[in-house]
Length: 288
Length: 79
Image 1 (cartoon, rainbow over the protein chains, first blue to last red):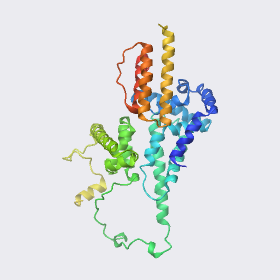
Image 2: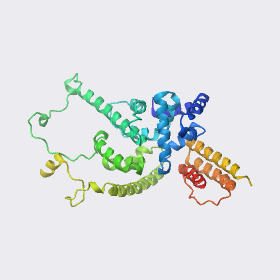
Image 3: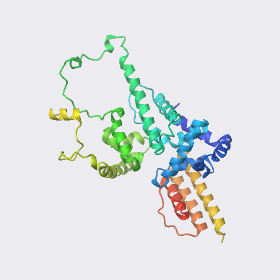
Image 4: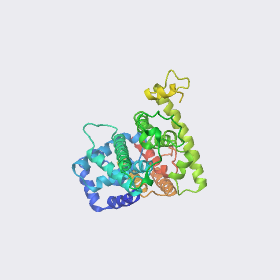
């Protein structure tokens, strides 16, 4: 079931009369829900990423997660999926590769998110619920993809012609090849440490802003390509305007990140970059 | 002029209506022009009822309804 199909199903669920009755009943248990007449109103607040409504979003998210855990119903899952649809869509479109069909990827993202919701430790994680839901979903999705990829590599080919080219530097004891610069950026699973750092330090900047920086600067996707991929239905003029807007937005985000990550700057580096870690130090001394 | 209690009740109703429209527009990925038009029309009626001069910046496209909601919250001190 693709993400678009999920969205259509959500509309049906949120309009159902039984959903309204259940919502009215549940409002008596949760003060955060009692402020709202309809699930659509809840959806509006959950979709507002401004700092002003952060506390209300947090309370609503926790109320919905509680209900889904204690009295599971398709309404709560529908509301949470509708509210987090932009995040799930962004996560889905950061995944490349042929290990899973596109529809399987959509289903993986949706089902993983709901698993995370149902197992979320509300008693242990008492704040930043939205951030933890997002991080946990990302981690599980990427772990599943890595496992899927590893399983495919381990399957022996039936035909000799399926074997990869002979690579003597892969033999044990062979000298390690010099590290080459890759034109394409690292895969999404290689960026998780950076993503976690940015999310922990700069979540308040907004998920859209962070995603843009991660996609274009950490993973190395060109901004033009990102715009073409994310706004495929826009005409060229509109895409150009979007490109310019995102370029300015990214510059502002980077300027703010520099301030937030200032304490990580390497005091020994003239350029002010991060201090190299152990393996990177060795490579640096080898002239890499 | 309506009493304070009536104005507050109507103000809450307008706020709830705005929230519902925002949710609906999000769910159906409404066209930005529709969102902006709805915010403009609803905002005019809301400001006429409260007899306040508009001071908040108007949003554009899909942000227009959010900007109207902020204006309502600021007027009631709920922000």
